[in-house]
Image (cartoon, rainbow, N blue to C red; front, side, top):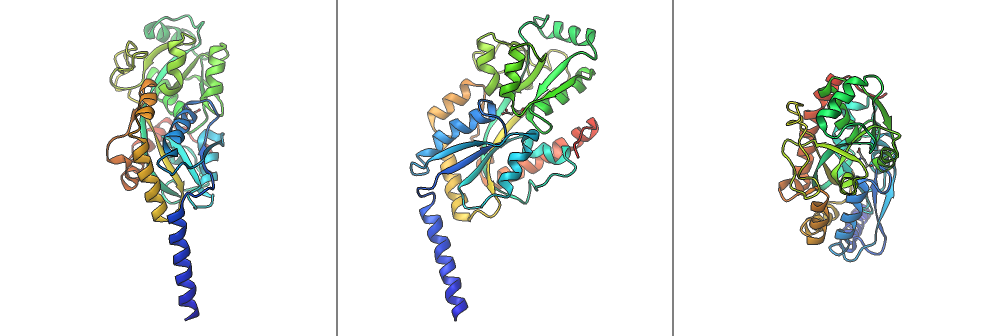
Length: 324
Ligand code: ASP
């Protein structure tokens, strides 16, 4: 009898928790890269759009950068599953399992999937004083400078790492990679001429391309983009890199074990945020496409991530890149 009463009390407390969520306690969105970069940009815009649908909740961003996003992911995987720790990550969620021999968390088992946020193209950009005005000239310069070209990225497992890896393979020239804790500091060094090239999300590069702070050579998607600032950029495919097609995405997660009611509340809020005209306008202005298909559903997003893991694992394996 006592046991039954205890159980009933626990169930009631659990239901009350979901009902009052989020309450006055702030919600932290962990971003696994530095502040001011593209993942951070998406997280901050999304936090703003989530505030109202979550009952005027306080949302704060915590940048837990390093190791291509895996340090932040590990922190979230081990956080309290009360719905007050969320995680905004990108394609690195799906590439890390193939890149890291000993990942300290399981992408499949250690997260509650809330839903997908957007698809984001990438761009290949160069330092402003790079002696090439278009992709053809860049390609000639790379081949003439074999062994000297360097390429920034946000660490093994970052989108910029994946894109750079694909690029080096496609061009057939190995480059020295320079890892940062995010592409915000990488783009600063690119503008300063400390690194030669960077492949990064349009959510970071669009303002720099518009302001002519960097040289833009191509977009990584199969088709040209429609965003005004980017529409004249050729694709890498049309520039001669057959089949080159890298688009990345962002999703929203929480630690495994968040009560189902709270996951449902978060998913409902996400759906509202993804229809927010302000959020859509900001994202589209930066080349991103806000998700409007079934991948916004937790189970569908989880399936999509599993498909992405299966898609990229052989590509990464063939490239022979990994970390212990
Ligand atoms: N764009 C970065 C990446 O390459 C991450 C970031 O700084 O947001 O994954």
